[in-house]
Image (cartoon, rainbow, N blue to C red; front, side):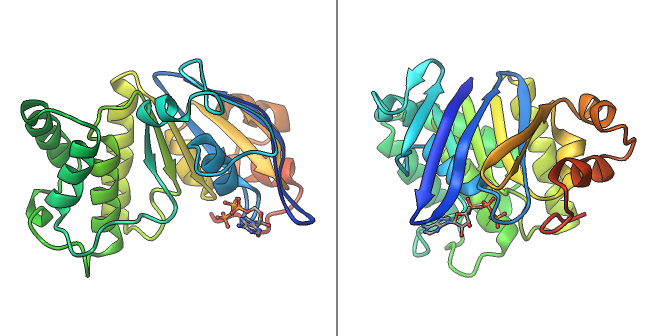
Length: 244
Ligand SMILES: Nc1ncnc2c1ncn2[C@@H]1O[C@H](COP(=O)(O)OP(=O)(O)OP(=O)(O)O)[C@@H](O)[C@H]1O
């Protein structure tokens, strides 16, 4: 479970995150939805301890990220916005390198590696260097690498960005599988249909603040709109930066 309380982050005069708080629960998919520049990536970066908040608190499985960042990192699997693969290494080497950094024994590595490779349908690219990989191939490799230590909590920053329809469908299936395994899945998106199709709970962010935190059905009821796209536009007050 991921709990975020009253997070703040400013860059000069820009208040990127201005008092964000929400809870992402185990066995659920939580979507962080907001237009471009709303503060999604900055929020996620503070969650996975890449960036220090000016104020506020992050708890992962009850562990305070400021007090024990290493324990929090161990409890998290993260697909960052910059996918950050080692391009001279093959996909397999990228994944195995992370497994070794986590100190995973060989037998567990094999088992976990095979399960991820099958779930992500990436066996055909395993022994290619990641240099020259397509967006979808890069995302698959980065996700497998992020999850090799079997984390309970999974954070994905715009995971389907740049993926084609088939790759997007595959990734959505994979996220459902993570949820079925009882993990806490938190992902960001500015694509309403995606969030609507996947999420148990939607946290809408605009101008660095949470403007709604509901189930998709409750969001529709709250706004009186049957179409989620119309509901979002009503909540945010503009359709600028939101993709259909
Ligand atoms: N390192 C930085 N230095 C200066 N300003 C920043 C920095 N990172 C983010 N910002 C600003 O903070 C605001 C929030 O940015 P952020 O990347 O969190 O938004 P986002 O919701 O992830 O947007 P997108 O959907 O476009 O990725 C923006 O105005 C952005 O320009």
